[in-house]
Length: 262
Image 1 (cartoon, rainbow, N blue to C red):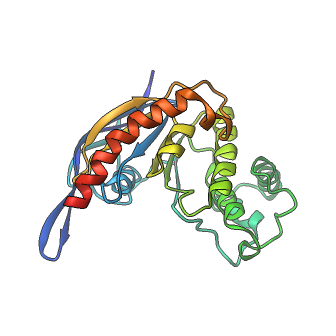
Image 2: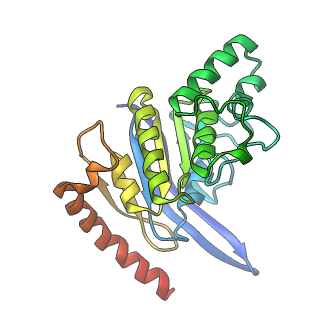
Image 3: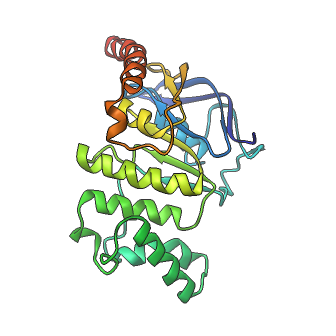
């Protein structure tokens, strides 16, 4: 199967108070076409740093990053790659509909097509009837759904997601999992999803890459072979979920302890 994202011996060093701090060290990974991969690890292990280097938002200090077999170029980010941030980045002065259609507007898509695609996106996200609202009138979950659709409306083949549901309450987070899984089951984008929430990683992904405490290195990889389509609520009640959760939690817990002692 085609490899869409690959890193080879990837590293990142930051200058902190006049000293070099190694955040990521020797990370080599490969993500296949249509695969949903979660990048999991304790706070400060470099998860978001890795994602941001792949997204060309940060330069790497060492190693290589390839997208579709080609080294990335920070001067020309790939149009095949979409990015969903930790918090919604909606423009408060634009309606939900105008926010979702913003990238289409920039691309010069005709108004009629833009309106049609935006209405479809609103329906997919369960936001029918809210297109003319402004972001300040919506709940956090609704804003995050709109932000997700603003990225997906341009139909990126690769989706990078940086803890997009981390600030949401449990109920709203589970609803966002349902929305995302429904869209992914239909579109089958290649997804790299950063999270510190093990339950979220198990609910969404095909594979979990566990990073060590800083400097972030790949500690283990776990295959998540629960049947699809998945229900974000009932999945968590199954013995298979509990068994894999316990196995990964033990390894993750070791890194929590290391991080606290650092």
